[in-house]
Image (cartoon, rainbow, N blue to C red; front, side):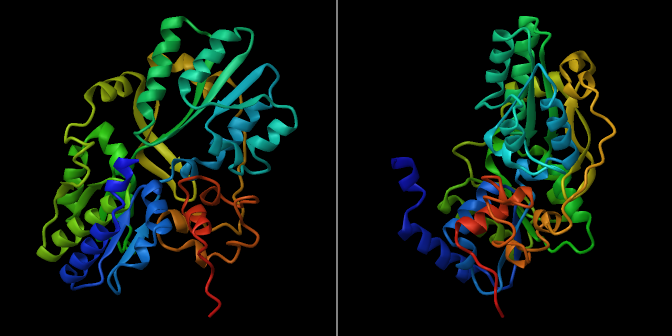
Length: 365
């Protein structure tokens, strides 16, 4: 694992921390947007090694966590229908809806299957022409190209029994929504490297200029994050507000233009509800009219749902970085990975799951 070793070198980590302590003169507040980055920061204890007063704010970068409750309830209503195979990624099966989750629904006889790529769902549709195969498509810009490609492939095959329940969300509108909040404490962002590998970073440049916040495109290994934080602090200390690219080995300013073309062909921008946050203008993707025949929300009549969030779960405050998992009275007791009240305790990118896996406990003081 040479590549991982290079980016987990403890000697280099100490040097970066020493340089960070020499550079920082104020208690800066930096948000990492990506849930994968959150897990690295918490698992490695990086957030606890920063200079005194400096704080990482954990952002809404978990696609499973921000999938709205209504979408989950719709997915379960579709999955409960005879003749339907509902597919999605593994994390989605345990996310609680209003009354149950997809895993429990499968235990009661629904045909709910884990797939590792949306193309697996297309293959199932081709193999089972007598069944309706639905793929629950969630994620940020990172997964959108694969989902677009699946739709394009289904169209080429002429499949009439394949559809998607789409709940794609976009990162830049979420960042601007956070910055527009008068209570926002974020002074700089670490942008998700995998999102930028697809989309590049040009759409972040107007945000940095308008809100005067540094944005550093950052990878996911410990040294990536330490260097990203250092670059952000250097900008903050010097009064600069630019987009910088720490993740140069994987990201270019223009991104992956072929992937972007596929996304633009299949999807269009729309308003989207984020679980625990609310509806954000222009923050999601939906299928275009040309590919509307693959829209499961149109194909299946699952309207009239009245989703109800668990009143004990503070996922919204956690997803916006306003509170930590250890601030929640249910954390680690009534809410655990085996029995979650909310999505952030389920997903492999959820902040609550990261804290729980790292053994973080609530303060007794």
